[in-house]
Image (tube, rainbow, N blue to C red; front, side, top):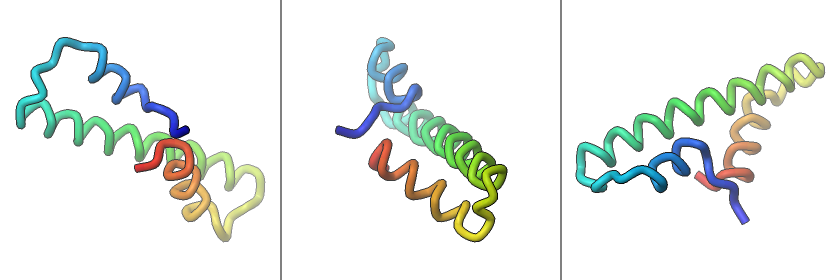
Length: 68
């Protein structure tokens, strides 16, 4: 089962109508969060000495964990 991001959880638990402006805001917030998560994973991979595949691993981690 894929995990829910903090942005998804917040959106689900706030009283948001889900209109087009809300959906654009959610999309933008999810993209920012994805960049933060993949950057953190890439940094950890680089610090562990995995320079050659850090970008791929970061993207794969995010996809495997959150499915997006």
